[in-house]
Length: 508
Image (cartoon, rainbow, N blue to C red; front, top):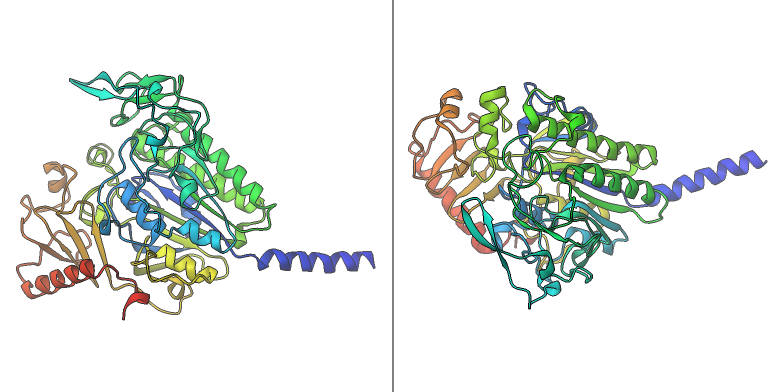
């Protein structure tokens, strides 16, 4: 009798657990190339066993895109469902303000309204109100940066005991832990809206720790004595695992946005990962990132939450310009099979890895060639949790991908607009992409790379037109052969920009 009662109780308990909305885990890499992962590039010289395993359990999109070719705009677009270029183009600089307007609905705010606990761990790079803790009477000091002298705020220029407003907690997250941006000051841990330990010294570029590839790219500024950027991934991974384990005990579903600083410069894999790849320290850094992802996914499994958690993996943009030297030295092209890198309007700047695992909905190991965007995550999750998106200040460019994930349709999107700088645009329409501006390159393409990969030496300064189904590497400019197509796409691009939205739900 007792055993029977226990069995009934177990069934009821499991039913209650599964009655919860699905948890959501977004894993977001930084400056990761489409060709770095084994599941996207069989010739990759970087082992990525955990992401390859995730791909085998997910729907893996081959035509996924970020909104921008740089950090801040892509993150903003993903967390709002709105193209960044409707509001801004550049990144948030050191001690820069928030990119979110108060009335703008964010993904975590939406999920909170549906009963979710929300957390962001890792890179933020979306701004804070640092002026609120600024000691205005303390002036900037002069520091030597290379051959130039610059004005720099020291640690005494801020009251570190105060809360820093207009950060993650003011835009939908219940919890935050990270260093905001690994290569920007302040160099310290921030938990929620306060520093864990106050910066007490000034970090100056070139007078710090050992680097393994590329440049430090760390801007001088306030730092905690003994600050070690090599501890970033180990520390945030531990926090992520703890959060997932604790979430298993809660009644509410969770949304965890885990944003990596890697493989963005500084390229600093920990020593235990040296030599794990055949693509140098960058490859080892990717491997360390994959290793961290494995720990987070294992925590989901061990805590019994894996089968009720939507896992989304992607990256903010393509790889940094160090990829040219890496290709020459190790024969590993991080953006394979594309042309272009971070910042570029060509595919390599914004055509990124993108996979979604939704247990019970997506079919494991599916490869999908439909055009999709990170901007679509918001409308898709709104559909999952039953949230009615308002017409104003909410997800103006987000498409609901749920029918695509269920296999009910073959495609949702027909167009996408990519932009890093306001003078160059990449407009996708069906199989065609139009690249405007004087050049689709911004990351100092080398003559050696062009020759090795059989590209023309001279790039047209007029709008360039490519058919990606026939020419995924964007080698053959068809603008001169199809002037009417160029004109029609220019008209469509101007219309979508002017009307202020592209989401199907807003079309009259």
